[in-house]
Length: 243
Image (cartoon, rainbow, N blue to C red):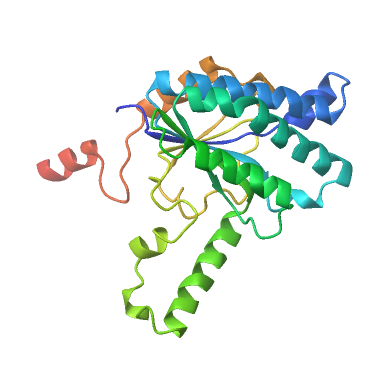
């Protein structure tokens, strides 16, 4: 099996990484940003065309205000410090998530990153920010319902394909592989529609320790799997034919 064109990552474990070292949670988040930089640099060389990362969920607002403020600050630093390198490296930045309630300076930075890099094609870096899978589906349903109410859309024309084309990820293929670090075994409201047939790899390492080698290992794990999409695998087909 070829390398997946689209890999999505739940970057988990920054706080526990810091706690294990007797450091504040902010130190873990800073180390996590460095792991993200290294992963973005490694992705194109491993055959990845789309890399989606879960940067800030819609549920993360419930964390202490000081930590939310730290995370917002790190986002600003990442974009201001790394945007030039991303652009020079041919990385296109896409943001998914609800922007309605974001502070104007954050929204402006996100829009700047998308506008500057929109013509790049070496890698598409999709940043899920203020994102939740259920929220995305609800927002999309409301958008389509409004179109039907205005008479712009026939309800019978809404299909799985057209619904997917109205999600935040429109124009982006579904991820073939979803990776989660820290040893947790759940999706945590991440890409619930898009990950319907994704292969899942759960790694015990905390996100700040994630390296190119971890990513390469996950890709090798993916390559050893058989994707059936609800049908029969090659071995099952052979057995059925003989029977």
